Amino acid sequence: MEVSKRDDSSIVFTGHLKNKLYLVDFSKSKSKLETYLVEKSSMSWLWHRRLAHVGIRNLAKLLKDNHILGLTNIQFEKDRICSACQAGKQVGVPHPPKSIMTTTQPLELIHMDLFGPVTYLSIGGNKYGLVIVDDYSRFTWVFFVYDKSQVQDICEKGTKGVRSSYQEDKK
Ligand SMILES: [Zn+2]
Image 1 (cartoon, rainbow, N blue to C red):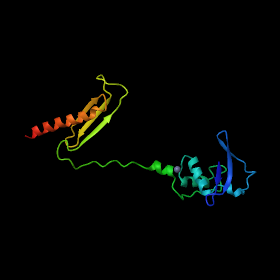
Image 2: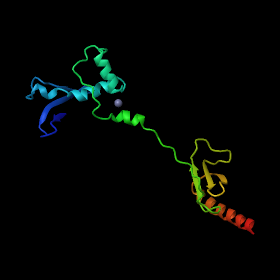
Image 3: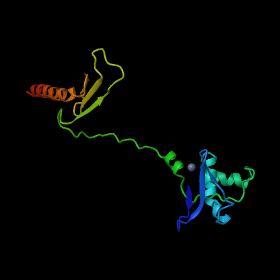
Image 4: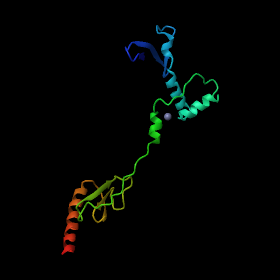
């Protein structure tokens, strides 16, 4: 493993893998010691992560009141946003309820959901469930099928039957 500089991509030091750990021999390295120092700002974010993502303001207070032994010479500044904290604070916005009806008659729009295969077969030997909801009337059908290939047949026959009974009702 080689670590190189970001600006001129020259190799800073080389590490050798030993028992899942990269070992770096700095005594043989040509680079100056300053190279290996971590910048102060990222050090503060390291402490932020170490202490279960505590707020930067609280970290500054801990440092100021000397609550962490040996922790000195670090500036806690909120100079960026911690991605993990940001993700943790994000909330999902619920779908707004639909108050207007967009369909004008039954079977104009249907919602279907096929689930399965289920772990245990039904008594009738079926392993898939097909749920059909009519958007206009909210009438719901549930079919149990043995194979997915039966779904098309059910849909065609089912909608035909419903449509004809609806036409009869209108007469
Ligand atoms: Zn964080």
